[in-house]
Length: 164
Image (cartoon, rainbow, N blue to C red; front, side, top):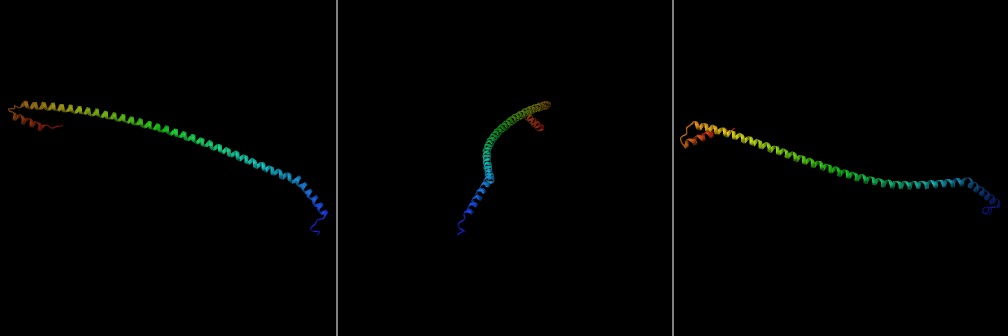
């Protein structure tokens, strides 16, 4: 039965050893362990706070980026509208200039045609006058006795005329 029930001396020394060990552990081990646990806890809390701040900052940056993108899109749209208006204005001015130039060319061509027509009419009048004088001269040189001779003479003159 000695093995199952310990003696008083053994219990006494085990208790003293336990108390000394507890005193040494509390003095040298518990304080450093507890302080390192507190430091670790504070580090983790600091990291969590930093992560939360970083998350809030990222949310703020995303909102700022979206706002900047919206402003950039609006500015781009305004620039595109202005460029389109400018292009439309340039095209309209080019059309107006082209129409004015074509009208000027048409009027110039009409004037040239009228001038050439008038020159042609004047030339025809000169030729008719010359032919009339030639015919009158030939008629006067010949003494014509009768209508048939006159008709034959006129027909012959008409055949002889070469139009230039």
